[in-house]
Amino acid sequence: MGAVVSPQQFEQNQAAVRSAVERGAVLLAGAYDGDPAGPLLFPAAVLTELPFDDAAVTEEIFGPVVAVLEVADYEAGLAAINDSRYGLTAGICTDSLALSTDFAARAQAGVIKVNRPTAGLDLNVPFGGVKDSSTNTFREQGSPRWTSSPGARPSTRVCSAP
Image (cartoon, rainbow, N blue to C red):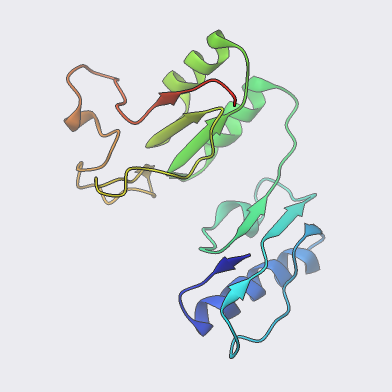
C-alpha cells in the first residue's frame, strides 16, 4: 500500500483503477475501495490486460498503481517505452551486458536503472525526466547540461542483481 497526499488524490487513484477495470483491465492485485476519510493508505494496484493506449498506461496516476504490459521482445519493449509522452525513469532486468548498455543508450528517460527498482534516487539532487516528465529547466539528474560529454547520463546505474 502507499500513503497518498490527500483525500482528493485517494479518490483520483480509486477512480483511475475503477475506470481501468470497467474498460476491461484485470486487477491482478490491490483494490479500489476504501474510505478517503480514513487513513490515506491506498492498496497497491497491479493492472494487466490493458491496451498500450489505455489511460491507465498513458496518464500519470500519482499513486501506487502499475500497469503491466506484455511485449513480444526487447525491441518491442524499448519501442513501447520510447513511444510514451513521459520519460521519468525506465528500467530493465537482464543478465546481458549488451542489452543493458543498449537500453541505457536508447531508452528515452531521465533516469535509467538496470536490475534495480526505478525509484530510489538521490533526493538531495534535482531529478526529473525527459519529454512531459521534465521541468525543462535542465537542472535534473541525467540532463545533458550537467554532463561532460554528449549523451552521458550520470544517473544511469548498472548494477548486478542481488
